[in-house]
Amino acid sequence: MLQKFGFTQYESQVFEVLSASHQPMDASTIVRFSQVPKSKVYEVLNRMVEKGLILSSSTNRKKLYNAVPLETIIENLTSEFEANVKELRNKEYTPLPVDDRVWTVKNRRTISSLTKDLTENANSSIYISGWNEHLKDLTPLLEQKKNEGVTVEMLSVGELKSSIPQTHVLIPNEGHEALEKYQLLIVDEKEILFAGIEQGEWQGIQTLSRSLVKFFTEFFYHDVALTEITNKYENTLMEDESIKKILMKLRY
Image 1: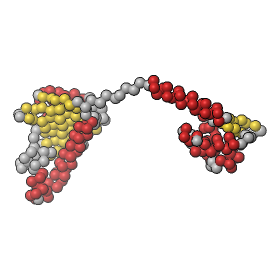
Image 2: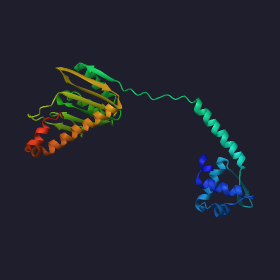
Image 3: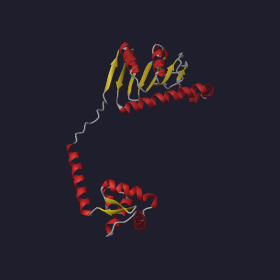
Image 4: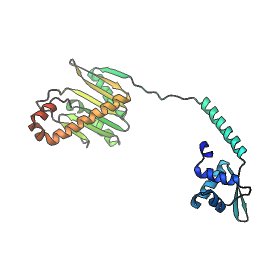
């Protein structure tokens, strides 16, 4: 029954033996009747003394143990339970704010400023992809963040000089049908800024939405994987017309 109140099996076995005995017992006797391993019995007994389940006394160089009356234990358990219930009722819970709002961003200069601010405030990681002409001015700041211990990984469409080891470069093929100017920034795996050109104007979104951050992070590594596969096996892939046709339709 004690196990239903959070006590261990060994504690329950020791208490049952001590409760059934009319005399105090030493550890060896408890081991014999309770079937608790000798290697564990002192640990169990000390724990039970701390919990107020049993009493201990040293007599003639021998330590004896006796069970606390069951009614006393029931009273203690009841008091503890009532105190916990009272604490639970009075506890005030403050839900963690989850900002799933998606903010629309327009204007190339505003997007550039936001990109710089988010990059500067990154604490653990930065994943960024876009065209080399837009990443070029941001590269020194990214290299600085890398030197500060922030994980930085970058995917550039077009050649880009960078000291960041995790820099992936996609050289556009003339046959690409879907390559569009875009930029994706993921900061600390909790905030994203994604922008592209719509009807000749730069516009994008900024959000802390967990589902969108997860989606765009997978989107980023999808692009990285395709870039590395294409770079390594370009000749082989381009010789297969069916594969080439599919690759040329991918945005990257």
